[in-house]
Image (cartoon, rainbow, N blue to C red; front, side, top):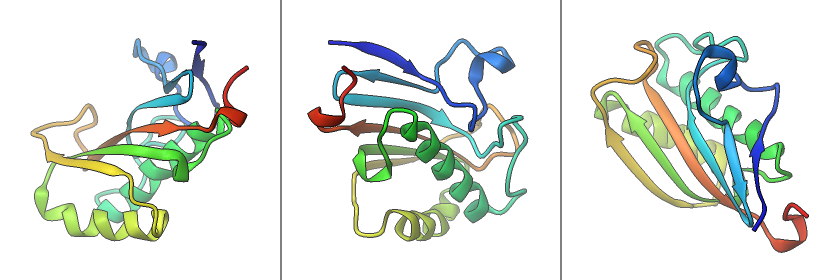
Length: 137
């Protein structure tokens, strides 16, 4: 099995900001996307305190990362949401439905006490499965 790091300059690259993590790792047919924050490429919070805007940014960051492996949001088979306030669940689900349409990957949503960015309201990680014809050679 071939393993490689997925890198794109369209998303804040963790090592640039001192983190020892990768944006994503492709291992064979699977892509493991690290927890994404609602940040722009300079690691500035997008959306202020608006959880819908933050959710759109996080999912956009995941989408841009997946494009680095010739994949997209419809390839996600598992997605995990970590939120700081369970009262945001309905707003997050609304954006999720807007972006994913009828694609319904397995999912987890949990409330956490704190995220790496104290102004962020959510962090999202995902696992995608890509068909053999698009797999890294």
